Length: 327
Ligand SMILES: NC(=O)c1ccc[n+]([C@@H]2O[C@H](COP(=O)([O-])OP(=O)(O)OC[C@H]3O[C@@H](n4cnc5c(N)ncnc54)[C@H](OP(=O)(O)O)[C@@H]3O)[C@@H](O)[C@H]2O)c1
Image (cartoon, rainbow, N blue to C red; front, side):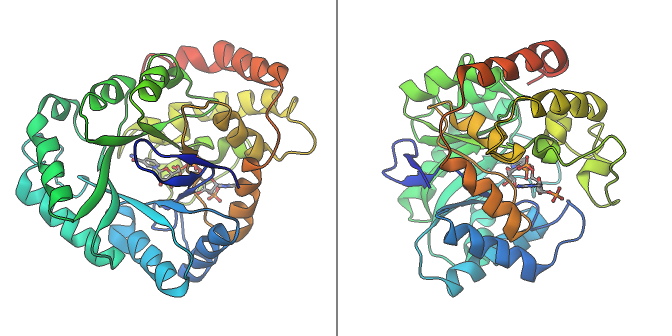
């Protein structure tokens, strides 16, 4: 496993880390035993950073990570998120009272005295024009409730605004072969400001694993079934906002130039790690075998210039017109 420094923290974070949304729910049925086995396998493979949120399974994802901590001595970092428990996304919702209550609840779920990294969970764009919200987070750091804080954003413009605040250590953003705009303006600035970048939805919700087919079906409680058109939350979180049929076509083109030694998931993750502004990718893992497969991406050699150019060509032709200017 390769490690990179996260922002201005002195943390060395595994380049393939763990996204803990699916083990909380919204991705079809999951069993706690299997989820826990996936978390254990991650630690076995050198993962030392877990991304969760207070709303994943209404806290069950955080509680599974707390169980992992009780069962293992290995040190690891946990990033959680706050803000999505609000009934409506408004600037006023991100008040001292609400943020403090969300943090207290996560501290309890995670069974710790201090949260390693708290991320605002895709707050409304206007919040970035309210420095007082970031002042509240500074106070929570001073009070010992948070070690560090960052943000999770939907759009590049929010990321650019977020890193104006000196306390922001990390930005979580959708980044993968189907979502390339963040690399243009945001990556160089994040690097300059020493802000860490967590690449979320790195497998485009499973599309980039190459296992999905045109006629694949998803259970009713899986967002790949019920959020394809953004019915419940931002459509960009489901298949990266790429319509399913186009995504499948693009994946079939990419399949042709994946080196034989790599699985498609490893290729997709290694593609992300080719960008040195990225701290880590946080693929969602539901089962130990998936985690092992994904971790393999950290140790493989750099992709060839040709492979990078081919991905770019597929993106420019098929994907760019439908996603580039949306996020
Ligand atoms: N707003 C936010 O802040 C936000 C939004 C989205 C995600 N996130 C974070 O980012 C993380 C990653 O994004 P994501 O989970 O949405 O999407 P993702 O990582 O692109 O896709 C994860 C899904 O792909 C499948 N998979 C993973 N590894 C695989 C492998 N090696 N082979 C085959 N299938 C594999 C699994 O589902 P199946 O087995 O069911 O196919 C898994 O749930 C989340 O877990 C969460 O921590 C944050």
